[in-house]
Figure: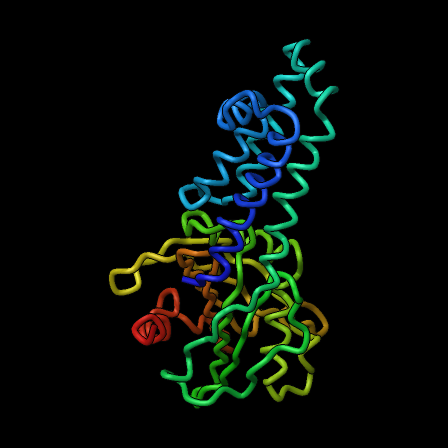
Length: 281
């Protein structure tokens, strides 16, 4: 567990909301209890409550925002009093959201832990990625094994998320939309001394997620064809990525790239590589 990230994701936003509300209470309504002051605005009181319970919430902040947006829209459409109340308190509520979201976004810049694959595969060929985005922060190492297999281990922060349940699904979707998945592949495949060059290769999805039992540990893995663009698109290998979430806002990815036709036949989900990696953690 990344303790600093957990604090920045859980306690820092919660503390900021409470201190801000306490200062408003001290300024305007000290005749009532502070807890009554919080309950008086169910929107802000609800934000404080779910932030306090964020460890229990799959997808964390992003689930919170989704629920609050839908709940707010429905209440505004159905209740005239809610529309009047929102018009009166829109500034305060918007500021509460800004405080909450900004703290979570800042936490995404905190450094991730170091990949542990050196215990299995020795010294990596690439120990840092020049093209890695600053947000969310990540650490990555790449190995080229004696059998020609490329192994990439990535530790990535999951801003706004502390609970590992559904985290692989969320990070996988973000990776696809942001282009991080393709960038990770291109950087790793540049190690292959191929006359066509790494930019001639692209990914074609075989499936976007299957749960596999890795020696008693059930993890999500995604599977892609490596396509060679040479007077048409031809499969030249496959890439498997395993998504191992952890409590506290970090996910560990292991990507195995292997050339050839059906290279993972007899080794489903790149089982042999993954089990060694899991045992080293």
